[in-house]
Amino acid sequence: MNESYKSFFRPAIDALSGYTPGEQPKISNLIKLNTNENAYPPSPKLEQAFSDFNYQNLRRYPDPMADKLCTAIAARHGVARSQVIAGNGSDDILTMVFRAFTSPELPVAVLDPTYSLYPTLAAMQEARVIKIALDARNNFAMPDTATLLRQAATANLLIITRPNAPTGNSFELQQMREIVTGFNGIVLFDEAYADFADDNCVGLASEFSNVIVSRTSSKSFALAGLRFGYALAHPQIITGLVKLKDSYNMDMLTQHLATAAIGDLEYLNATVAKVRCNRENLAQELRMLGYKVVPSQANFLFAAPPDGDAARIFRGLRENAIIVRYFPGETTGSYLRITVGLPEQNAELIAVLRKLLR
Ligand SMILES: *Cc1c(COP(=O)(O)O)cnc(C)c1O
Image 1 (tube, rainbow, N blue to C red):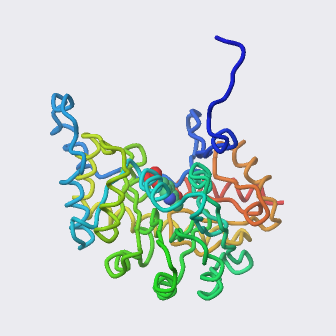
Image 2: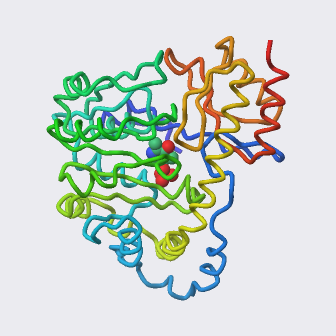
């Protein structure tokens, strides 16, 4: 290999540190509560779907528009087929949205704290990021509508993660309507966790032409390994996103399996009900240990130990083969983000946390 290396990357790419995904360690018997995967397996209907798939079809290109899948998604939400686009995970949808609506002249506004992929996508576009601080002393509540709209005024894209990550809380639906009405740009509702929540913004995507709702199968459908997400929006927005998506962004096997998963909403609803129940039980147990727990509408909890030393608890859990997520920093550094596990995993977590209490 040549010793001397000269970078021809754009300076913005050289400066980028890149997104850091949660760890996927290879340790056995690990209780893995760090990346918000579903505690339960995907629909058993996928087994049949696998055996129905003829591998010989793989010599053909897949349907570039994933039409059968998008028709199933439209039916699920009671929207028109023309309001749907599918993606290779919702991260693919987010990439399309950043390419479409942000640039050095067109900033993006995001909540703070929120999903850490957004600033990385903004940096690739060389777009400025406006951070809208949530109130850490009040369960990470959003500022009032007038304040938020003033802060986001120069942005062309406003991302509201609802429920939010890593905090798990949601925001009043009525306020979302006010924001959409008052904001002069696109509002993207990242609804990665909406299946675990009491309500969602799908209605706003049909009612307003400046709304995009993004969804993923990674959490509620227990299909993080499949890479399937989608967006709902006005048909003109969908047409614009289709122009800049990768031409074959949905492979044939994913289209086939995702269509089967969307077809088994009964299983989805049963799984979601169990996760919600486990979430409330775990929150109560944590509060009994003296933890401060942000009310969650997702499949994880954002919880602060009584002494605020979350880094110590994070390390202590690791030594006991339990991994959760820790985000150092001023607002997040006293909390742990804990994925809701199976009841027996949650019980083991609580037992170890009790040992770690000072
Ligand atoms: C997990 C997650 C995503 C990404 O979902 P994928 O479909 O796995 O790419 C997007 N947004 C938020 C807030 C998430 O937590």
